Image (cartoon, rainbow, N blue to C red; front, side):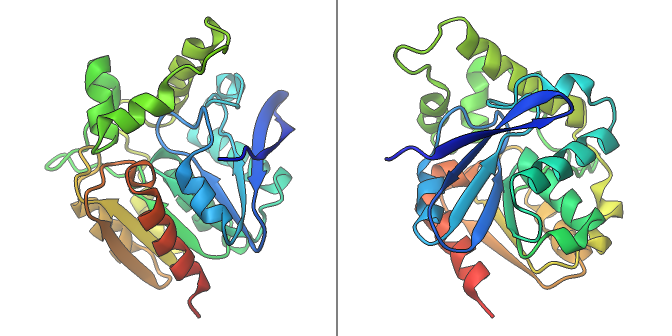
Length: 262
């Protein structure tokens, strides 16, 4: 797996990493819970036919400590909008997973002209007290891999410290990513995004892992019914919450097929 080009932008006074790889029409990707400490096979699959641009969210791996100055949901949305603009993604197709999918959906709702087509993998943001999502911040550390992926070893490999990496900074960066996500969604994961779904007019693909243990499948229907633009729901067999990690080739194929459709 060849490594992507890496550049840096600055948002609110903090550096933010941007990865870029591939050729063809642009597609942006906003990572899921825990962020991306390394490039993944899913992104390589997308890069076979697209220019894949992956900006880090504030506080996530590659996002330094940018989350520390974001005090409200509006702060987060404005920061993400600026990140996308500086990354050259204004008007491009946009996809995201989990936490990142929620941010992608919000951008499409509030600034519809800045998003082409939209692909969302099990986005956060909804809360139904009769069928609540699993709170990942309330779990034992050894339970998290099995909540994120159908195959826990995939999550463990993503988070494993590379040989030669700074032994102190790596684990701090992973904890910081959980803290950053908590600033947006803790404790209930409820951003009341359902009130804004009607503003999403972009053609939207919703992807849900068959074995998602975080976001109930019923939430997919809420998204599908709430979005005004044409919407398609695809369940990914054998995948967990982060379906892009469990089934990279299959998820990428569905996304590319959707983006290429008239």
